[in-house]
Length: 90
Image (cartoon, rainbow, N blue to C red; front, side, top):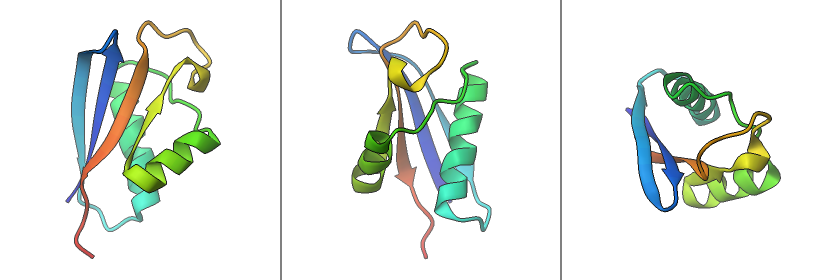
């Protein structure tokens, strides 16, 4: 089972969170992108743009934060954080 946790933060307070699960046989990258898309849909957000810093943080720590720089539209929170909380056993 692959689980991705999405959290919206503002002023160091958790406003919303959700967990998406994916038990398909797809690649980790596809599961992350599909999970982020599901999180954004559930939270009524546009999909953020991945910057180099996001990719680096996600590879190293299995988590990253998307701030205003990652969104085209104005957001009313500080950042969206995604984190892998469970990965498939290979």
